[in-house]
Image (cartoon, rainbow, N blue to C red):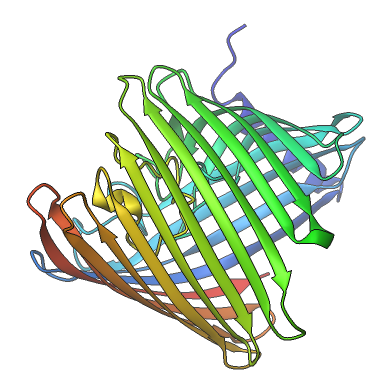
Length: 380
């Protein structure tokens, strides 16, 4: 039976209206004003100021099921260059509103639940990547089972995507043509032992296979010092046969006086450039702008940083990274971030990035770039 493409969205909206009339819905949302400025060696500076946010409506539990929807919007207040990057606006640098979520969740039987519809989801190679004004959302058909203690199994399909990393940001479009992406994942956690692990496999038929696993262990060194050790590995293979192996380690330490530091390394081998998947990617050395994928084949990436919680309201961080390619050419990046909590509902974030990018990986040609982003957030 052929199902109308709009049936899921229309049904969700009709159901939400009905439940609202019966006073069985809850609503929450946020307002976000965002400013972005980009400047590169080869181009003039471009600036965009946008205002938008989200409104989420969720029904109360009804026989184990909930229905929800989220509307996201971004509206240009000014844009100095209509050809500037579209991370704050649509793929055509225009204001837009998107039905980011329209879903049903609930328990089918025992410890088996389902998620069906448009949904914000975060997995290693399909994630929200809340980098701009409207984050990634996916159309999913998933089952989750937690029969085994401390283990959650997720399996199903991801068929469409919209948002900041999507080919068309303001419209849900099919992933991998009409074939979608098959996915299965395992999440394991022992809270008392400080151990967390996950493993995921994504199959985009006739296109690419992505496999990922990581393991982390948190140790309490003393009353004021906590140490976290993490390792990850990813294997990726195109249908053409090109493949790669990416692995990495990370060490993070929480110190007295609200100070924390981290260091990470990723190494990619093979004849395929590391892929970030459908989102920002899971790699430890990924920073505000660059990831190991910037280095092409046989790349290496290093990152380290420090964060200081000055008081209950203000947190400051500095991160540095270096990505090298097979010829030992390199691009570096420095990120400075300040986050200020105005009150229980409002906050302000300022992100400054000075980074290099390869204009031609084979020749090692690079350019210097500056990116500044500022966000005023208000939740309700």
